[in-house]
Amino acid sequence: MKINNWSWLIYLISHLVILSTNIGTIKASKIYLTNKCPFPIWPATAPNSGQPVIANGGFYLPIGRTKSIQAPGTWSGRIWARTDCNFNDTTIIPACQTGDCEGQLQCKGKIGIPPATLIELSLQADKNKPSFYDVSVVDGYNLPVSVSTKPMKPSCLIGGCVKDMKSVCPEELQVVNEKIKEVVACRSACLAFGDDEFCCTNEYGSPDKCKPSVYSKMFKDACPSYFSYAYDSPPPLVNCPSDEYVVTFCPSKWGSHEPHHGENDTYIDMVE
Image (cartoon, rainbow, N blue to C red; front, side, top):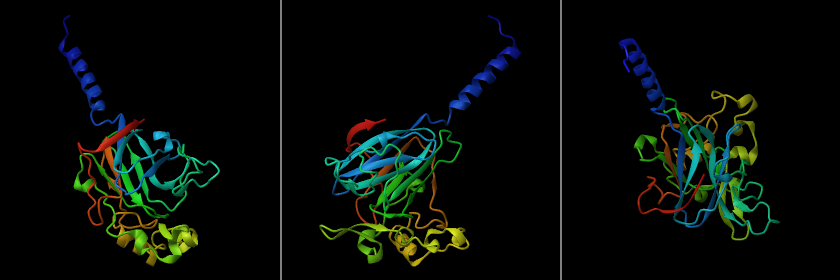
């Protein structure tokens, strides 16, 4: 078939347009969750409004294991870890000592009870648009966590904590397991007291009125890469478009927070 120059140009441009729309577009994002804590955890997910639930909202993750879950290329929501859960006795609610979601293993869109360290994500399928993520202790803390892209780039890393937040948590913010008298989480001042000054609400609902408190400074000192209060500045957001992310609960040791993800990791089943 003979193609004149004009037809060939149209043909070429149309194929370049199709190709360009496919370059830099993510159909799905994979998130690796690794448990380096010395105890099992129950990670949970909750989507933002209008977004689908991923990984059924929650699952069990044994010590030293990694699970990969899949999210749409464009997705926003939160991930956190629940601790010391018992789902065998349905009469016990909450079922988890921290981060519980109405006593259910699969949260199915429900948000966990604070305090719990939150990973917040806003992912874009189009790599030309910003994909943001952060770690927040605005409502409190239960475990240290690190987040990065895979492969890891230093500019894309949110490190863990440089101190054990539970060991420095003041008594008025402590959540204590009464049976063993152990601090299992640390509430934020907003969660503990509900004051506008700490919650950045009402007359304190702007960056110029809501300033760091002695409590948010304590969180920031222990976990410098996390959001410590609503108007934390500069905002500890990371913008790194990727199709693979790594979330590590309890990075190896205080002050060493590089997320490890390699050939020797032990995987359990993929959750779609």
